[in-house]
Length: 113
Length: 116
Image 1 (cartoon, rainbow over the protein chains, first blue to last red):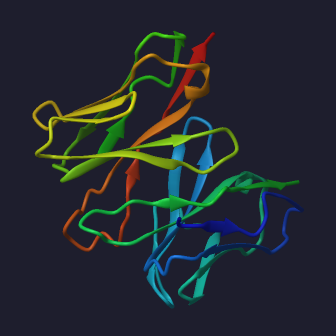
Image 2: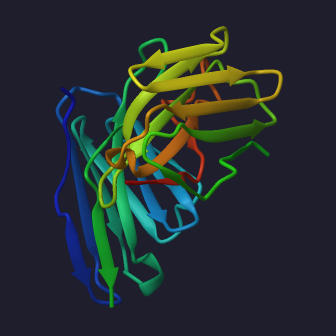
Image 3: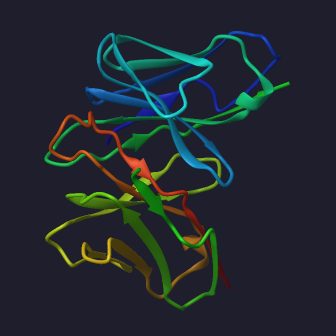
């Protein structure tokens, strides 16, 4: 079974702090994604990566950056956390098999105070 | 712009009834459509995929239809149980066959509650 893990289930940070969210997948998938999920807004794509050191902006990249130094690991960085970044953050991975399925991690509930 | 809409934010039904969730999309012709289940505080989990040339797909008590003329998919849960209570998301690969890098576009989800 594909396993996607995220470094924390719950995280509380202060405004202005630099925050790192880590995601690891164990199935050698090429593609990895970071989403945030807010009530009424659904899943919104922040960034994705299709190979090591390759990244593309999603729909809401402002205030975030990412790093993919190894194929299995994709990190989301909040350079200076703000209260409007309080959200559920979900990581996913996928590979092309004639179609694509996404495999999600359990999520990190981030609260910025 | 591309749009996916799940036209019920919440659906409440009695145990044993059939739940029917709707997913509509505009402005593109996807090669396939997927449904995911998400429990509170967890990540979505893939349930079913239906291709454009398939009218219907079944898996145990789940049934998905795909009408490419209406640009609509229906997701049915028959003989529903309280354990089916969750958020259900539809998703499309809007660049299937191209360089989508596995990106999916998700609907906002329908929260299904099955009452005992």
